[in-house]
Image (cartoon, rainbow, N blue to C red; front, top):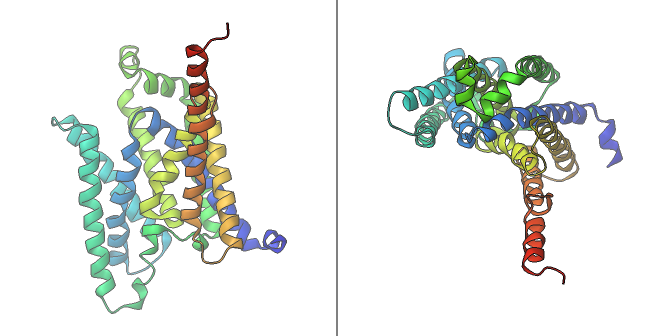
Length: 293
């Protein structure tokens, strides 16, 4: 087991999953606080037809082409949701469900079509359904850093405006904060991190990695800055630990292991977190019902 820490490939994958987990934790916090938990699910599923179309058009399995196609289709899906809610009486959760099912169905149809073609070059496209962390390369690490650093700088630069937008959108409008632009910015950042994560954990599981760290962090604090920090830490630790467990085990896929770990952290947080944890509430209620005399 010690030898694994001397393996350069292991560290590339671990660094990639750690960065992905940290980025997902930060941006997923915004989706959780705005009650848009289905957004990640819808966008990740919406990206699948873009990935397959990119392969059909380019004829190559280059990650740049495939992820660009997924990014464009994910952004398109997000705009579909926005316009559907804005120009009709359809609520956000309904619009997200419609976009998720329609675009994912289209993606599966295209994937089935491509797999029916007698062309060995299409092999491996199905990895975007459940992910394959072993395919992470150094260039993917650089790509994640190129996204993560500017994203953090943007969040810091607009920190006050984002806080007001998250907790009181109506007040933000009255004091002149461009709510629509901030919402668009956050949505685009979420789409980008989701598409970047498809290679690692896949379409089906990416929404869990996006939302679970934030859900766990929310149990521990009422401070937005602390929530982002805790969420990023949970995502990074889950990515690193999941990569290690997958590396030292036999036939355990990295993506599902990471998601199971972060889900376990959510469960533990719901149980033992101070003030919000179920155990804390139980003892508090018991103390109120049976005070010491």
